[in-house]
Image (cartoon, rainbow, N blue to C red; front, side, top):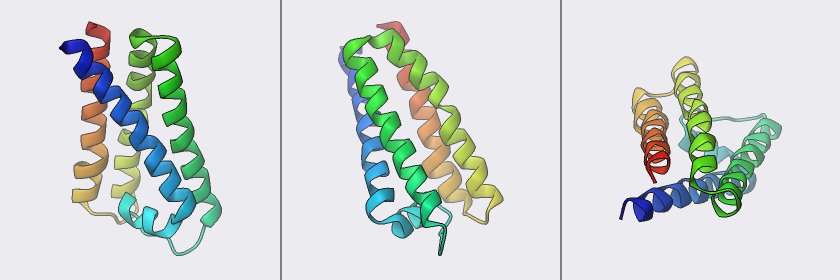
Length: 121
């Protein structure tokens, strides 16, 4: 049961990275608004974010499939720095506390929980 939950959360997190990455590539301004800091220009930076998030999703899935739970746990633990940084970015750039904590900080907490579960299996 624990293994199913740990792997399920890891798969969901990685797929969400792919979805977020695709959204930043396909509808960058709407994606930026959903991130918590609307953008009117800088499409190149939004594209970079899309590529970054999509790549993290693919790397996470590859680690889970080819290297196992422990490698995925380390990856997710280290990658937790991203939503923590995103929390600060939203707060420092006029975004709402609801977006900063409700989206980004909550994601970091879920990632830490997922990493802990993966370490436990």
